Each structure stands twice: as C-alpha cells, then as structure tokens.
Length: 295
Image (cartoon, rainbow, N blue to C red; front, side, top):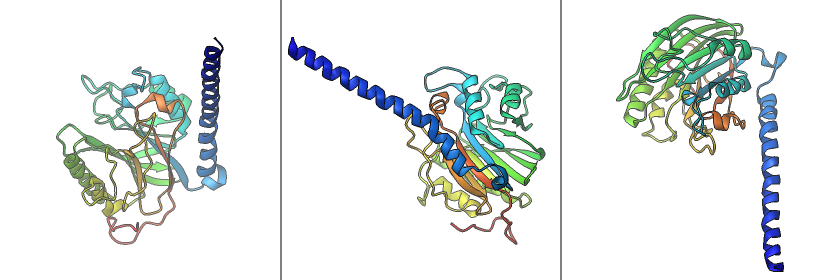
C-alpha cells in the first residue's frame, strides 16, 4: 500500500508540475506577442512613413479543432492591428463563392474596409484573395489569373494611403511546384508592367525551400531579391514550414517580418498570420523598375 501511495504521489506531482509549466507557457503566450509588437512595430512619430501589413490564410474560417468559427478569425484580425491586410481562402470554394466574414464587424471592430476586388457580388475576393485597408483609397484594382493545374488567382491594388502610395499584391500559389514557378513568374511580369511604386507581395506561397536553384521563389528574385528569411507559419499549432511571406520592392521597403503566434491564432486557422513593417519612404531606383535589388 505504501508503494502504491508513493507511485500515486509521484504521478500527481508530475501532473502538477506539467500544469504549472503549461500556465507559465500560457502567460508567456499572452505577454510576448504584445512585447514583440511594441518593440518591432512602433507607434507615434516613430511610425512616420511606415505602416503594418499582414497576410493570413484563414482556411475558410475552419480552425485546427475542426470548428467553423468566423468570430475567431475576426479576433485574430483585431490582434494583428494591420493597416493593410491580405487574406487567403476568404470565400467559399464552390457555388456563389460567398464571403465568410462579417464585413460590417471587421470595419467597426478592426477599422478595416474591404477593397472591391471581387467579381461575384457575394464574394470578398478573387479566388479567395481579399485585401482590406484601414485608411486610404484604391486608385486601381486588377485581378490576375495565374497559370494553373488547379484554379488560382491573385489581386493587385494600387492604394493611396496617408503615408503615400503602395501597390499590394495578394496571392495564393498552387500546390504543384511547376505551377508555383509559373505563377511566381506571372506575378513578376504583372508588376513589372505597372508604374513604379512601393510594392508588397504577400500571401500563402505554398513553398518552404527558398535559396535552392529549383525553388519557385527564385522566379521572384528579379524584383524582390532572394527570399531567404524563414518565418515558419504552418501548421499553426507547431509551425515548421515558412509558407506565408511578405516581400517588398524596392529593397528596404519591408523592414521587419514576424509570425503572429497568439494562443487564439494557433487554433483559429491551420496557418499563422505574418506581419511586416513597411516603409513607404524608401527612394525608388532610377531606371527600370525590374532592376534586381540587393540581397
């Protein structure tokens, strides 16, 4: 009996210690993202000429627990506190491609307004790609049909913002490597044909092997340089693969990129959002807008 009590006591102590470690981890999860945001994404005068861009594959509002819950996605969007936001999988895939979020609540609670890129009246985006902006107007919007073995597209919006003009390209690349290579090349071509202005390309690139000669991300290098930084964002509970990225042109436009790892973000979707500090005051290169940027 004494030996049995001893084993029970040992097991109980182990559970209590694990519970204490879990509570400490939950506390750090609630504090560290706010501390990181305060350090890397300044406010006030330190933010002059800069804005926060974010990209988030919301997985059609289905979380890692299998629940369809648009309200959780809205709460994560509020946490991001972005000035410009790109969403992937924001519409249903079939039927009338109905948008999945409450746009009125997003505008009221997150201060973000949907940029009109959709063709279907019930949709939020084009092939599920949607763009939201806090303050500013869309001067020009273009829908891009990408080469595919499966239907894929991207949206390009040229925005007039309080800090200056910004081109936002939101994309969700395909599952096949050859398709991703063709899609990345098509995006560079579309941007290269447009008037030079600060540009961010963001979305779910479905590619986790930058730096390799055969990586589809190499197609983006003529404009954005090598995409060597890796910020794992998938799967959200234990991120291993850096599928979600924010790239900027010209070099220096994207100053800081982080993955948003709040407790809610880990369950709301199978992807974690990524955030970037974007500098609109970086001088444009003289000459051809497609001139390679330094690494």
